[in-house]
Length: 257
Ligand code: NAD
Image: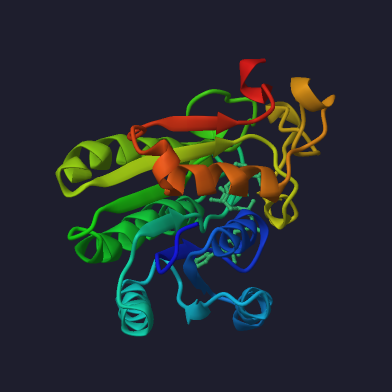
């Protein structure tokens, strides 16, 4: 149990973020749930409070500097400290052949996934330096291990960038007792897959369906948000105290193929 410790989860209204917020609350953390959709966040906050834990909804777009600074102030005002950050908010964005991907589409994926992760950690670190803590970045197998998603260039670049951030910051922040790790999910059954905009052209062989491919451990069945949340709780807590700067794959072996 992590009595009186505080966690911040971005993109906490759905999918992996929602599951991570619930699992961290169950483990004893007070949780700040950051996202753009008030109704979704409020529903998770209610669920946590009904279980006798503390939670607060923080309305912000991770890519907007002022909103992120304000959300962090609100969190600190409410709970007075910060121990764990889960930088999870992300979009698949547009998957398209490189010659069709517009600069605006490229920028949008960079903005949410990379700038958003930067702004989350940038605002969090000043509040974590005194007592140390753990930062978990939700990257993807697309960041390193498998590139079986044609058209996902912008997304994959952001996910690889997040892994670079985890390693760089693990070194930079070690002297403050702050660990930084990344989880790299394979196909997980969440809404992100419904929100992927795949612009297919016959000649590029971009698959009409996604996720595709095999997942050895589960006969092709996608993982769940709860599978990833359990790993996030482990990386957040002291049982992983000697792990930092590490990408941890959670993909049922998908990336091995
Ligand atoms: P999801 O769509 O359910 O969750 C993403 C969350 O981020 C949503 O709540 C969304 O509202 C929020 N969000 C998006 N843009 C935001 C912004 N600008 N500001 C604040 N919040 C924003 O999907 P998910 O699968 O739970 O995705 C969570 C993370 O997991 C993402 O970073 C994604 O890249 C990563 N991931 C997912 C899979 C998968 O198969 N589902 C695989 C690998 C990695």
